Image 1 (cartoon, helix red, strand yellow):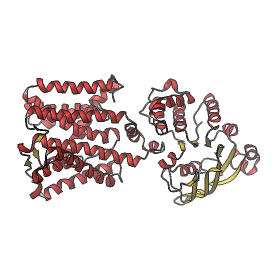
Image 2: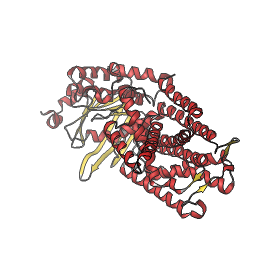
Image 3: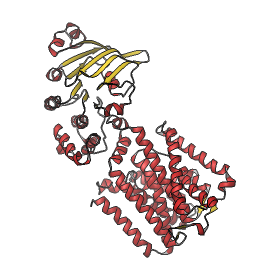
Image 4: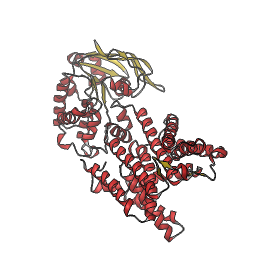
Length: 234
Length: 311
């Protein structure tokens, strides 16, 4: 049974059809990568899924319920978590306060501080918990973003280019982290780093000019001539 | 007990001791400062924590004052009913204004609240035969009684102001350290991130306006009851600017800042008045100095330099 299902999903910005007619079905528990060239509509698509922007056409179902018209916070409360492509954290607050805000919605008082500490340890930020989030290096801010996603214990974790700007060592750590998370959580991953995609994804969906041009297991996608032409550069 | 709670309880203890130590003039001043600080604390909930700048809080202060004053004047309500009624009147007005004004944000929110407040002021003047808005009316001494105590007596007045101040101060302390308080700060800092953590931003802002307006209304009702006068001048624009100045001077987003700011501005004006007629010039210079050297207000400066734990 699909955790997330879209039917004919589309979004127009004036004359531009950023996303058109996307049918997507995410099985519970899978790691799905969403790839495609810059401007293919990946962020627009996931923004519609989590409710940041409204769909122009089509429908979205999540956890057995239609959510197309539901406001973002209601969808998040149903178990979606979204991490921003452009880091969006509470820069003036400490790392711990950032993560606490993510965790406090899903944890009671007794469990709160423990869960915050666990989440921080999960991304390796426990040593920086009391620093102001805005003072962290870019890579660490990305990890705060990821920690806020994880802290919500979501059913579906949407990660929008999480490894952008991370060092090689940090990327390896991130891959290990998502592998662990994926045992309990469905993950939708927008990612440019093809090694990360190949290491993590159960299935890959390829977007180009707002349309799905291919979908399949990593090996199939790698071998697909249409994908190679559009994205992998032949 | 946390350091913050010690600080806040300590302030209450000092103010209680001051009731018996201060000379009459400062005793009277401090009673007034405490009530105005309640007004500023209400303002601070919305501005300092939720990050919404209102230019219309005088309407909530006046709603509380008139809710109390009119029921006492025309229906002879006892204070024990009139004071809560004033607060409820302000809460109801805040709910109405919030539903309409929260369709806007930023500068538009400032202007919409300013316009609503101005409309409220004009309504008071329009119903002048009832409200005595232009010259105001006096709450007779016989009506200024609460639980058998004469509120026009300076000591009773001071202690009544202290009770209200303490309740609101400790409630603010609780609020900002609670889950709700943290969410308000999150909305102030990054509204979209808060929404995408699953928080209903609109509902939280609505709650913040109503809470803030209610506290401002309680201050208005208490002011009328303790100092005995009710009038439209409390609904005018300058009275909306006052809590903003108090909070900016004392430190927006700190629990104790509104009191510090109110006392600072009150005495600055008072001291300047002994030297020159142009006391607002001194107040203006002080505000410019604060903007240059302590952008986050006096307690904001203290928090940044010495006391990071200050809530």
